[in-house]
Image (cartoon, rainbow, N blue to C red; front, side, top):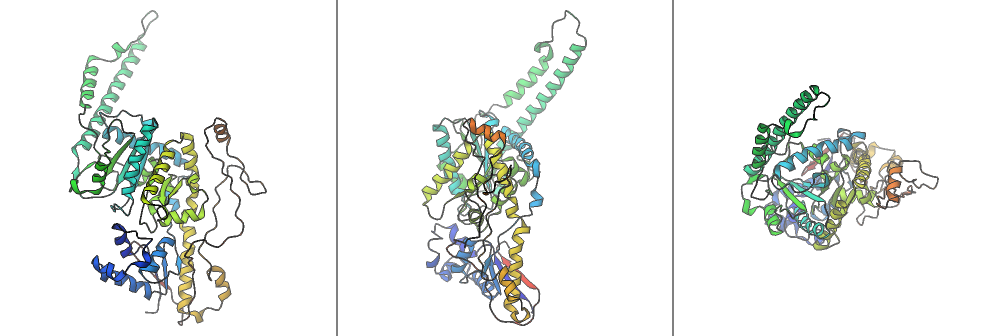
Length: 524
């Protein structure tokens, strides 16, 4: 066929299998006997197809530098370039409404929490933060093991520090279930009945108060509560309150699991003794099913749920890119990721002090497991201690990063890859080599440092001027908002300091120039 080919891998099959086991993957990449490892896992034929596609394509690319490093050792070909994943930012854009959307969706999560924790709702929802993790059920690859361990340590730190803040941590990951649990359904039912009863009593009180006021004459006593609440109302309300009594603790899972005793998430929650006790400052909810608005328990679509939360936590060990933290970013929700995810590496390259912009990056590459868990705990504890205004300011800064993830920006790398594929296969059809060098010719794939939209003009030195009056006032009050981030305009681009620099190179062969064919594997 008269076509050129581009193969973009979004993950390697063998890499995903190796990381799922207890292997120090990234520090031993160069030592793996790839054929033997694939054979031991029964995926040798699939691995060979992936490797053949890699070596047959005119241009081989990956979605991140971390996956490029992996591909070079497992697939035995150094990628020609990196094509980061993007998002249709316009779909998520809410401009000035995203803060209001957060409040609206947070109230819907409040409704779920009232039902799930009925009988034990001894914490203030206005002083409650919602953390979550979501994705495929890959217990180790997605960092769920680290997330749960960090939650246990966070719980201890919040209790010992005397914090009044409560954290409700959600885990949204599909697993094998039989049905929704009776406890979960009952909780939503009794709180709905209570809400309906209170609403009816309110309407009755309003009617009686109005009638009593209409007939009021000078010298008559003012209406009191005994006249407004009827005996029937009191009996009905008492019934609803007795229905709220509960002897058992709130469940840690919303569904009945197929293999409850063998589920890794539930077993670790039991090991760290996170059972949603009254003394716990961190509560956990494992929802082993993807979210949708038709769900009778947590009736929210995923995007709406994310908007209502405060922090996404994605402590992945194997994450070639990572759409979940990227989606959080475009919706203005701060997130925690790692330097082993493509998204984390990408944002770390682009942003100085990324945590100020709501992108916290845990070091899982150069630190030991315990140190990484402590770092994740520190990030979550630091976030839990932020004031409401600090969180609002941070969400504003996070949402400003949306343009960095827009396909309008990322798509340019794909255009370059297509041009390179055509030039490699049909070099004689192109004569403007010098012009092409300006686009691709040996330059490393580095995007210039982004500039946050300032609240007021920069001076000539390139420094941003301080933020709004409210932020300055908060600073005077000693709240340490740090809304003002001094950031100089970037000068000339410096070479990428990535230890395995990736370049797009030209090779000779071919004749005429047809349209390129793009291929992909593992999610492309």
